[in-house]
Length: 165
Image (cartoon, rainbow, N blue to C red):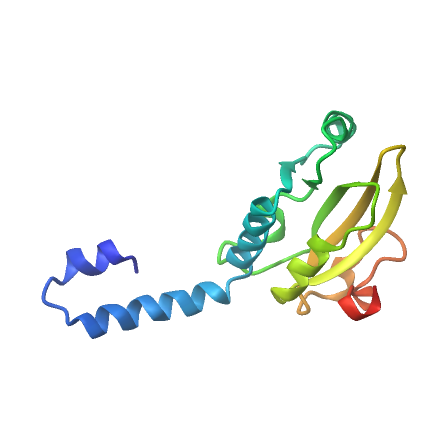
């Protein structure tokens, strides 16, 4: 329930009830995988990362070559939100991301998702002349092992943790 709905429906409702309803909604939002995922992406954008959705394979190479020119860190998202999340916001399958990093090693994206209770599995790193491409699978511990089979050798058991990297 939004503030507007609360105020329009019952003008005589005590302020304690309004604040309780808002607090309840805030708590439920914090448990929604989709909202948490979007919040992490937004925080990364605030840190200077650039984001692009690449749902079609033929788009990937062009995006990588174009984005490599400006030498900023980029997040290419291969999985559409509708494919990874249910209508209620629960995660149904991992989201595949490819990071276009400057040549130096960086685990800022992994840490951000990890700290917001997501499971992060690293795919392979591909070294380019001026950058590194890193594949990440962002999921949830409740996903079945079979959901992590995006490529041979990638599975939930390979979850990234700050103390391991």
